[in-house]
Image (tube, rainbow, N blue to C red; front, side, top):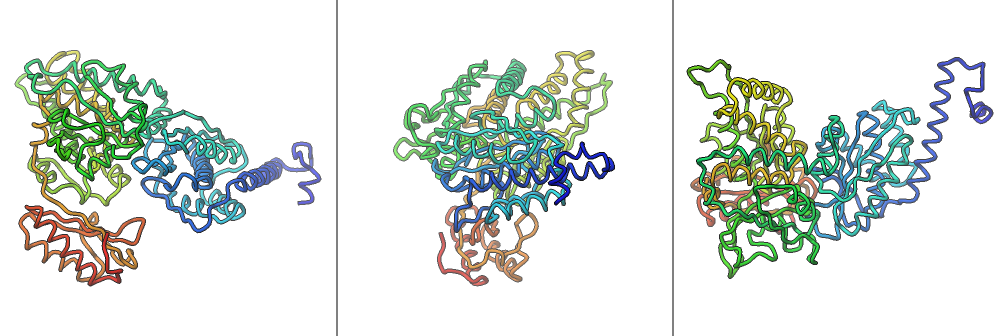
Length: 590
């Protein structure tokens, strides 16, 4: 320490070897980093009695107590950028949560969610009791991950926020966290939907155009391509030319107003945009519509039978519906399962056309492994329908991070949760082959159905947001496919009839006592519980039931399906009683 203080500039000390000089310079820079991080963190003390956990949704809580968490998320994002050598995203949002909540999550270089390997460090960082503990964690983690903390490597973090009142101040807090790491630069992208930020991060790191305008331009161009390729014999009069969209009084409605200015061939009317009053996610939004199965605010008798859609607060979820009754605002809900099924029908047909054998065919088929990825919460009728189409259907544990990872194993992977979050992923290898095939067909078979099928698939890969579920791009793809099919919303709804279902929550002393396997469909512990669940399930026609522990609170979730609602209710309640018998419980359910 004495030598360091005597020679603040090691370049001026000729007796040091080059290697020794470099080590001293790094040590000196490390001291500067330590001081900066300690000083910055001291401005954002952690709230007492609160513990934060990083999950699929990132960190979420009341916006008033998130300051320290968002600051530390800024530090986390900067470290992630240094580690990967690429731009990282940081989004301030709480999605479908109430307006007083807020949250923060990190987007990795590919535009997807932050790698799960870093989640334990994120939790430890958010819950470090004081600046010194925080510094110790950062230094230790940096050493383990070989992350230089001396400013020799730059970092770039792209920030976005939704329209919540607490968003602006929390974004400024995130900037301070980023700036607390030497060499890190925060780039404020402004108010965005969550999927827009993910798209921008992915595009920036791919070296392609990556502004909000570029997002709109790519979506509108690819949508226009699909509309231009609608077969001439399709009867378009069956479908209403207008789609009514509930914007959840959030950022999605505002951005859809901008996007629709660049669209041709689609009439969009945005309601609940947030510009005329109305509270974010209060009686509006995809989460409300999907769970309550009623029309959102500002939709009623005048919309009976019309094609309607609902976004969630940050526009990463999408559901469709049409109003059935003006008296109680009941609806026919078209959830993520049916959106997935619509996309699967279309993709399968285009692949079939592309690989159609013809007498004078000089091209080999273009093999593509198409995979459908669901969770156990997908309605059994949707799974049956997809399997009857001859499609490969696989299951993962609940959570988008699991679905996305599995879908990426296919040439084309389609995943959706019933809540309306999902997307389509095209492998880079398959896209390369598809571009080459499209070029070949444009020379020898331009305008043929096979050529059009190739172009349609390429347009879908540009329209859909491959980084994450995106309600705006999903909306446009739904509209394009419905137009291609010539289907009304009623015809789409009739693809299959959902099985009645029931979900219950059982309060328990320790949720970790339940261990599951096979994508959370089978109970491994407590031993013997699964056999009894199977016995109960076998009593009901088309019965299906599983339980899984919550990821955030001491409850066990029960899901049951059967041929009637009464049977589904009875099955769910029977299994709930079994959970009570096997676990230490509080003798109540919510």
